Image 1 (spheres, helix red, strand yellow):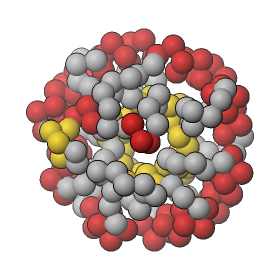
Image 2: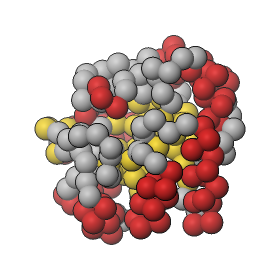
Image 3: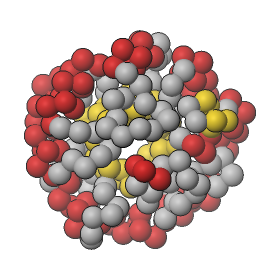
Length: 217
């Protein structure tokens, strides 16, 4: 059984259509990110794109910054998920989880790979009540770089928490089957591995991805 597929860095209405058509479960939109990244959208751009997402496909806003800013942004856009992708602490995460629970926006937290013992951090963040953790061995500043998926570290994280751990980091149609076989993740996250250029998805790569996924047992 294949994992859920989250495709991030959506910037065009055409890519909403392409990724939804072939079978993406979650579409991710980078919005008002605190650093300059190629995929950044304004709140209005994100709202317009999300309005075109078909029923049955969930949406995720990827952002970062102060608790107040994140809560305000989430309430304006109303995605299914908000992904905290910057320097948010466990205290910040817990506050955001609490504040957004009344409108059923679930929180995903990126594990800070440069901040010490990841297994301890995973347990700490799980206790905030977030829906899932995201493991990507790249940090936000190196997200544009090539494949760095780390199965061994990912498996350690899966052992210490009960919440879903999303697997990311240079996943492509060429390596997806092997990585899923090794890591057995409940959710995988792709972005640059199915792009033509930054912010432009490659339909042939997206199609190939889902053809491969359909062949998995």
